[in-house]
Length: 298
Image (tube, rainbow, N blue to C red; front, side, top):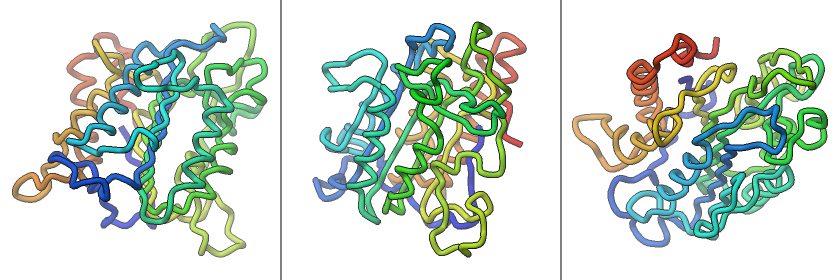
């Protein structure tokens, strides 16, 4: 696991709404917005399945709407899945719906509102050089991915409009998420601007400085399941990243100081994932390939 941290991210950024005690009324939860995307099966069979992706997204949904934890209003939750879930009022995780969901939170959330985004699925390069990446929607085809995949640039275009200084993204994506077949894709390449679509750029930076070299936008943090170049390990009911993340957000990560204080901070969650994720992989990995999933970003 890698927690992407940049200089402009203040240590004091606290996700205090990840509480391990009951929420304190509507005022504490009315301004939280959540977008969760989980895709287990793709229409294009050359794109590899993610067996637990939708279970992971549903479990995060249940946690975030639970009033014992975050207590987000269902109206502020957007759950996008490959298969419909009427009980949770999900929508199809199509290219159009993912962009629409991002546009909605970017237009609604104010500076102090909490915004959470999670994507659990597959991705790949969108151009021939491999240095521009994309996230596969249910209706993505490798042949026409430049038209129907969610390009990193598309995400950045929406999130550049986000006013919130309390943004947290969780990514469990493999940019090698496709099998050999009729469509040949280049090797994915991570440049200096990797994941800039979520981390943004500081609007106060020198206009002559390229966006890739600018500090991240204030109050943004990104948690990654892996290097992005290998599949994530699947456990019995969940992917390993979601399983550890859920334990951490339910209170496992609340250990900073002398005793738990009922709030999980960014630093606490980062330290918890740094320790527990590789430990859990070591415990459950059986093959050499599975053990390699502990690889981190360079």
